[in-house]
Image (cartoon, rainbow, N blue to C red; front, side):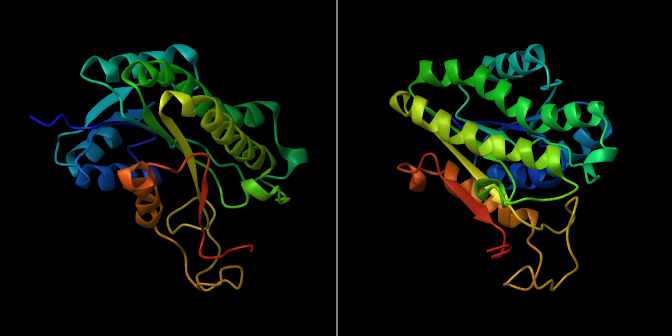
Length: 238
């Protein structure tokens, strides 16, 4: 009997994370969805996925939470795929940003990806390979200045460095590490108006289009791709 591939998705019960979960479910993955607080939202997401996904409550901004998530996810079988999708957005001038807000944005976007990757890599090494996909932001790879989103932009730029560094160090163990950088996504935290001149394709993207990019990078068709930063932004800010 063919063993189903197991995917762990942080932030997998809402937004882009949920869209990724829905797409990977259609691709045949057994899903492990991480959430931190809203049990009602998590249960709604599980039902939307046919009731088959496993829900795991854990605060992955902490090392204990990340280790527990991976340990419990791997108890039922090897983890083939980790999608680091969780991350809070903050739009605020730097001089009005508190230290607590700065640290919270860093923890939710960058520290979570670091801790979950660190936790899952030993499991992936032991089974001879795996895939990690990080969710970034559209201009993180080109160091573009973005006023009012400084901690968020710095954290997402760190995601790019984390992605490339892990791709280089873990390739020898059969582990591929890539990132998907979404642009202005409908229902996202900070979309511009529809038809904005910033977007050559003339429309907002959808969570499903981001999920399609994740599904491709997770697939066997991307088996020779690692360290890649795949922009899904309709040409915005080219």
